[in-house]
Amino acid sequence: LQSMKKSFFMIGQIPSYLAPVAANLIVGAFIVTGFNGCNKVENAAAAPQPPGSSTSSQVRTVQIKLQRGLNSYNGVRDTRTFNFQADNNYGSETTSRVQSASGQIQRSLYYFDLTGVTALVGATDACALEVTEGALELTGQNSDNPSYPPFELMFFKSSAPLFDEATVTHNQASTGAPWPVGGMILAAEIQPFQFNLDLSYGTSRINFPAEILYHWLCHPESNKGFLIKYNAESSPSITTNGLYLSTSEATDIQFDAGGATVSRRPALLINIKVSE
Image 1 (tube, rainbow, N blue to C red):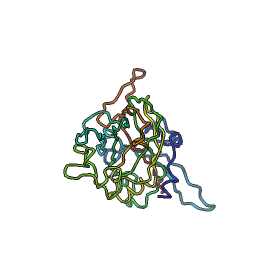
Image 2 (tube, rainbow, N blue to C red):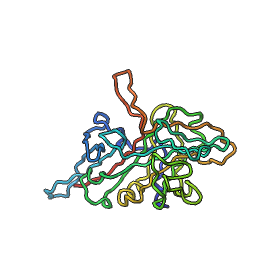
Image 3 (cartoon, rainbow, N blue to C red):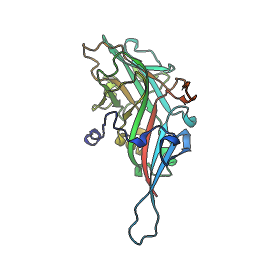
Image 4 (cartoon, rainbow, N blue to C red):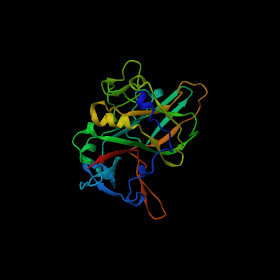
């Protein structure tokens, strides 16, 4: 966990190459429609050669973007849970919510299937991959108080049950699979990743620890997703009605100027360095 803490960067520190996957936004890059509906961007740079060497090699930074509907990708699960309606499921809703108000607690849950990422970068051994950066894109619809209190992103432990979008509730991960004793939070990592976020207007990004993504790629069975919550749910001073987030069920929006279409759905970006 100590090594993970070092990689918990705050929003605003995402490198420029974690820009949206679009060829006209990344110099010298091009889009490749890839395996399992993933999107891939490559940025190649020739590696320096020792004197007298005739061998040519390259180091590429490959960016993978996972988002429902992008090149037919359908491996994301996202929803919310609500302690005042502890047996209700909200998997079909277009909006999720993070809330803490008068004892009412709502959390947003996410899971991205990483199957196919290793093959997409031309590798066969996921444990040999070098994951350099990661980011989570979220689009807010409105917020009563977007920057206070801080939010927490908590990763579910590998021992936790994988939640089912269609049946998860505050009380259970799926039908017949209740959360472990102590509830959903005890099924997540004890060390949360805290961040401030203003999602009132458009899409924002959160740095996502590279160590977590690497571990999920190398050990797929350990990927049980993550949740977003307020960092002090039990604080009596918190009265906000919450942050509203678009889910993967949300429809795309189209801007009048230029007719560009932008997806409001959450996305996970993964940067992998590949040597040839």
